[in-house]
Image (cartoon, rainbow, N blue to C red; front, side, top):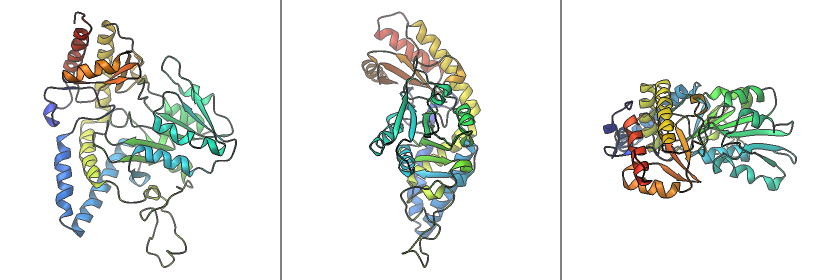
Length: 376
């Protein structure tokens, strides 16, 4: 199974098997030209500002295409953790209110809610079973006092893909909002912003854009009146109005969540990266990743590794985790041989994207077999 893109499209990938995309994506060469364009444009002064605005709008259009929504409903934040914390801090919670999360969630989706416990907010942590969480598991903990359910689309830990679409259909019959962290899915499998109230994602993993940005997509259907608890010059309709020292008005679209300028080098880089993703097609990327993931699970099982990630393609995406008590050591040893995986938490995780091939899988399993003293 060949990769969907040549290794030469990335910096330093020639002799490496990169299964590290759930932590860091390989540097796409198009980012170099994009960031250089940003630096060059700055030399134009006012013209450079115009070019920045054009790049920003083009990126919003690309993200809207990836998310099946409108560009005016997408905010560009510093990172996904900032976006989640902003949402948590913006609720007007009352004592007795609760939030539903689960134990496969990344810390950025947990810590902002724990911070609210001192205000009387109950944080309900749904336990996983066999490294899996379902929509039904989360719905079982929702009641009339639940203000929001928070879940990743794909778990960083086990790789399980949660059916947030079904979860949202059920929550729409209540007053409970849904926040989905698509950091481990946007760019590799389809994500729709009209199937949650808030969707956040990071720039430097599956979106291939490097560090410096978080995406916040707002579904206006149930969040039109939701306002942040902070404000900046980019949040308001007229920062230089005659009454600016007495009052202000938030923008009614997603700009109300943006306090100041985004990281423009990342804007340019993400524009180039999302151009690439859209040109290949998320459906094509998804098919490739799921098929190659099936092959990886098969080959790892042959070596005796237990998969924490479901075998069913519809229940996983790019992250595939395997039980491995000494995963951190193995990851270090594989790194010395030019193969990058994540090791830790009693597992090793191989993250598959469109730049991976069956030859990469063969290299990984061959190296693991040699480290264990087994036949390949």
